Image (tube, rainbow, N blue to C red; front, side):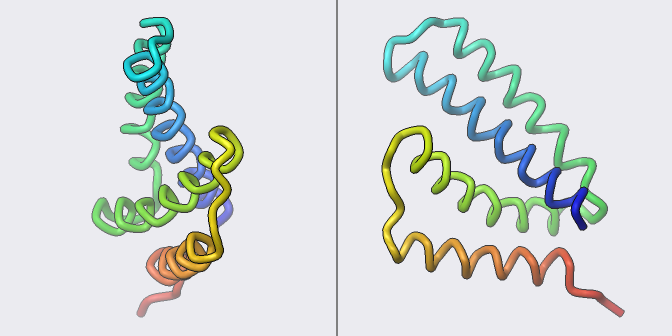
Length: 107
């Protein structure tokens, strides 16, 4: 379970971080090299979820929930946009769904 959670976090950081570098380059006029690095990191994001110990649909559905929460945290820590109480509530509900989808024992 710990390895699976770590893979979700790594995938999220690759997707959000890579996308953020492309954003900085294209939207905020930063160096084109940031976009190039961002695209490379996004390529890593494509590979990381394949290491999850479940099938594609479940891995990507659960990752979507992790991505939402990581996006809120990224916005707070990097862009200094603090989530409000409804963002936090939604994030906790989503994480509960991730835990149920990925880690509840099945027969």
